[in-house]
Image (cartoon, rainbow, N blue to C red; front, side, top):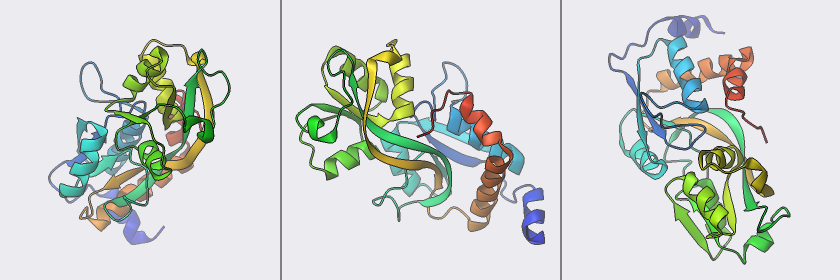
Length: 240
């Protein structure tokens, strides 16, 4: 490691104000706590990185769609945990990948007990999270009947009640939302994979380059020393 970078990482941040993290509420990566600050696997990873960097961190929890918009227009903020997609590439600064995720189709065993294909889903009503990667992927493929919600818990409820026949989302998010709704995981049938992508820590375009480098290096260290994996396993994370 270059000596200058070592010295920079050892010093407290020169910025007096706390770094603001816009945390998009997408469990289990970002979870609204009943009391206190938000938690979740991605939040805990970033909090540990901030501790190592000696960076004060202010977390603002908000719906996914709002977090995406605010991150593009608020100066100097971090964003958690977006997917790096083509339409977002030039709108955000991509600091580091945090974990791999698979976006899949799923069905309820009681209504469709075989893994669902994209061709079959074309004839069905599909639930998606508004402005999510699943939403964009299915829109791009011309899927005719998409029902969007503001939180994945809504899709779990609607799938169980037969109000939608398919659900498109990140697999770990589906599992969490299913349990949050009080529904058994055994009812979820994992179908065709739409995409396998990393979830990122991102930032507004004017986030300082020196700060971005410090965060990137610290997150790489956490991946190398195993602390990142230990955090993810606490949340029953299933890698693609």
